[in-house]
Image (cartoon, rainbow, N blue to C red; front, side, top):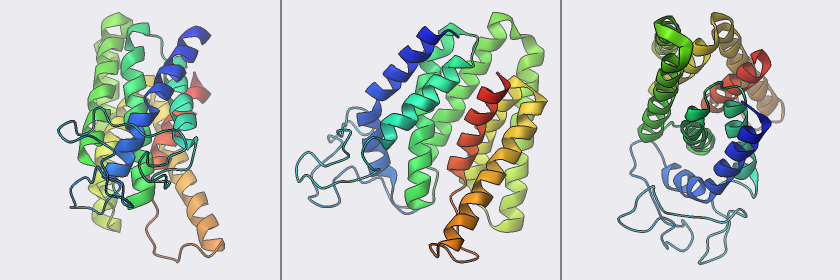
Length: 245
């Protein structure tokens, strides 16, 4: 799409940053624990009761509005990644009507990335939301000239990517969150081309390997320690789509 659409998408995504920050705080809890929509320091709600995940808001500095302590990601990081992700997804798309869905997809993806970094998990509500958004985008592409072959390639790629991560789960004790997210990344990359599927998959593995090696060299991880792979999967998609656009 045009530069105008890209800028509008980035701005819309940044406008969602306050809510995305509350999602990250609420879901950055150990696997099996319910979301905690309160500040861990003062226990005041960051997401109002009865409106879980919808209308909470945290400022760009990441500080609790009650006690002033920083909770969640560092200042500006959520806003910057939302702008980049939404801008890149919309810029590489050829379907203007899909722009709002792509902004929402960026919000779900950024949430997943930060939660995975903080708690080594990919919460089901956001993997499901990301998959649904990607499926809607593919459908819109099919209806605006892509045809059934376009959708079939995307669905096949999703099955292959998800299947590969499922095998890794069985062999290397990976997580089912990666499998579910793999369905979404497969859809998005498959909609582009088979080349994108290959490049995106390799890029995500390479990013995780580099990060893991760097952390171990710095003494912040030991061999065998878990490394969050979700952010690399998402980054691989964005990098691949922008590169091949």
